[in-house]
Length: 240
Image (cartoon, rainbow, N blue to C red; front, side):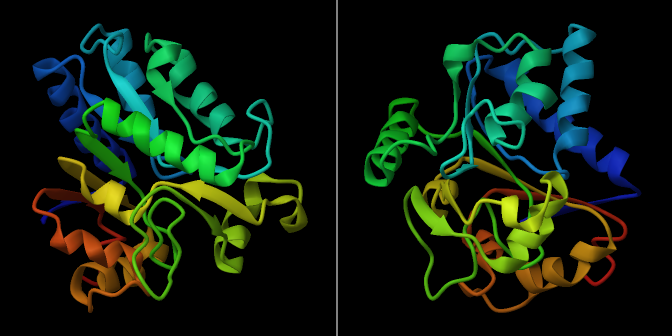
C-alpha cells in the first residue's frame, strides 16, 4: 500500500483525480468503480473541471457504483442514483448505458447476481474509489464476523445510518438496508484508491492501516491487496 499525505481536502481530491485522468488517457475504455458520500465530491469536481478543459474524455469509460439503498426509488433525491447524476454523471459526457448502479428495488438475490455478472462481463474494475466509514466500512460492508465476498444486501449499522442522516429529513427516513459490492468484488479491482479526510477519520484510518486485519474493521483487508493507493489529508493521517 502506498500512502500519499496531502495538506488538505483540495489537494487530496486533485491527487486522486490525476490518477483517474491518467488511467483514462492510457485507456479511454477503462472501468471505474465509484463511491458516494461527501468524501469523493471534491474528486468528482476535479474530474468535471478536467473534462471542461478537455483534458479527459469519459465517453468510452464504464462505471460501477459500490452501493445503493434498498427500497428507494432512483429518482428520490437521496438515492445514490440521484447523487451520481447531480454530482458527476450529469456534468460529463459519460454514456448513460455505460453507468451501472445496484438495483435497490429488484428482488435481492436477482439484483446481486445481475450486478456481479455485469462486472464480470466488463472484465472487472480497473480503478475502484473507496471512502472509509467511521466504523471502517467500505462500500456498505459493515463490521461483521467475516468478509462478505460478493454483492449482497446488508443491514446498515446504526452508526452508519446516523452518519448519513444529515442527507435525510430525519434518522427515521434513512433506509435500514442497502445493496453493496462485497469485499471480494472490491478486492478484484486492479487499483484501489482509498480516500480519507478530516480528524474524524484519523482513528479508524490508523486501525485500518496499522491494526489487525479483521472483518471488524472491513477496510483493514485492503492491506492484502497488491495495489492500493491511500490518498489522505493531514488531519486524517495524524495518527499514522
